[in-house]
Length: 166
Image (spheres, rainbow, N blue to C red):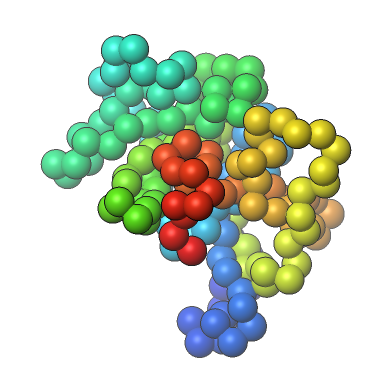
């Protein structure tokens, strides 16, 4: 993990900096707000859910809570791969007007944690309207690479834009 994590909570607030957990899918790096992350688990067998969308792999019982598992590769229309030892499930908690939702995201592997100022994030270029463009909160350069910051509520298709809790 990088050295930028040494900032205190008050320093982060003063500079309008948020921390993002990043992960890899199809050789690209994506990030989600670290405050939404509950835990990171290795891949384990799950219970299938009949008639669920193709990207909903099933559910697990996490200390008494049934947690749906979403394969982000399939959600984004990327090719499916065989799960391996680096495959992880990032368990996220998303707060919505109608309550809290806990879901698991299957990704190729966890990468890093970055402290990013909101002013560093660029809007998504408006090249054409695609289904996946609504999932992107912004783009940010970190060193030599670009990280795609995700809007979890939209990725998980839980709410319309007007219902998102900021």
